[in-house]
Length: 74
Image (cartoon, rainbow, N blue to C red; front, side, top):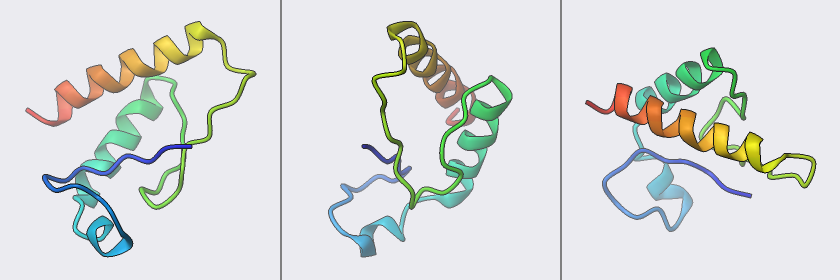
């Protein structure tokens, strides 16, 4: 289980999650969706990994996330 927050500070509690940049998260979500990667549309939901995912699925997800971050965080 994991979550992604776009922020310059370490997220340790709910109050700090509220300071994360939600606009960047929305852009991240939509850009990944367009590339065929679907995950929870809210930063306050968790990604759940499953053993039904192949290593190729995970590699694809990671490469698309890296590509999207390069696009939206310039």
